[in-house]
Image (cartoon, rainbow, N blue to C red):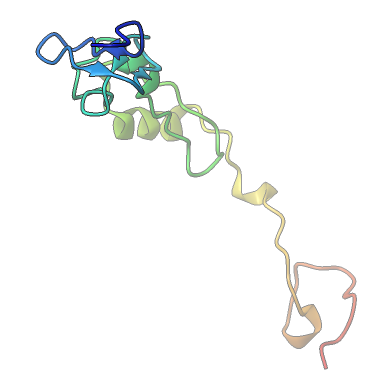
Length: 114
């Protein structure tokens, strides 16, 4: 081998391929070849740091924290039952052409559609 200092070996213990364009895992920081860069391919123990999805309440649009092992749907449902700040009475109705129908939501219509 003429240039042994170029490239890096894949950190996957079953591979150890010398790769001239190695990729660094953004979760664990180890270097891998293109075949082992995905979290599942190298069984990344730090994938939970990056592989996180935070559910959002569909009513009040607040992010809902979910602990490890909890089911997100159940946690969001509990939020809606107890803590949700959504109030449909506060939602302002917007009407495009209030003069074209019997709109009781607007006090002063802006214009009449042609």
